[in-house]
Length: 259
Image (cartoon, rainbow, N blue to C red; front, side, top):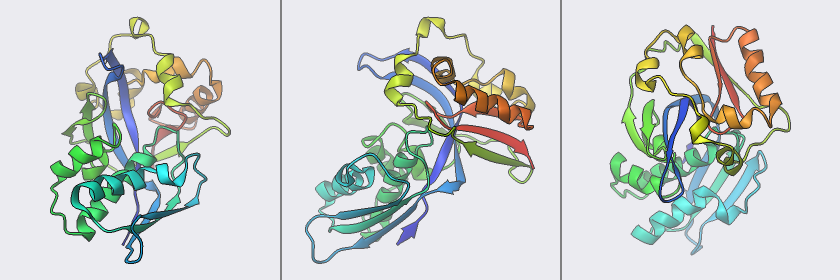
């Protein structure tokens, strides 16, 4: 079985408070982007007790056994005693870029295993398990636009009035740039963040107005130390983007352009 886990972008990302457990509460809108994706193939194994994974494409910086696909298999194996599988993952989504590639791979693995072994898990069941693997993993189960709160795991389906046939999304990463999530959060000063326009209201305004309404709070902490990312955002506007922003905690920047 082969699928193509896609990336996501954030339309607005507000850091609204710090939780007692050390995490931050967020407010954002997740939008799936199918043009950028990985390739994930899973095959049952009859001669092994443990699953195997091979990685192709973009080189990852984690050990294969720590890959989120393997963690997803172990989660279902421990609960349902499913057989071992062979996982082939070809990476096309850059990691550490705020695009959710690893989370997408994990969610798609859960969905594939659920189907492959007829586990009968509903989307809600899968979302609960996905949330145990990563904050934004649950989004990729239904993989449709969603308003997210909490640490990104509380999801509300959202109808967006974006006509895809009239717009295109470009995603770029400045060469050599990488922003760790820890670094991005470390630079956040909640007392210095400006008040926000309601994201759920702003998203329904004409896209030409988003530039002045919808912000990613991480830009305030990331741009001063990564000026190339800020320059890329400005360049996208210079090239005619209707809206441009860093996604997640960076380093990827996306622009929404008229076709």
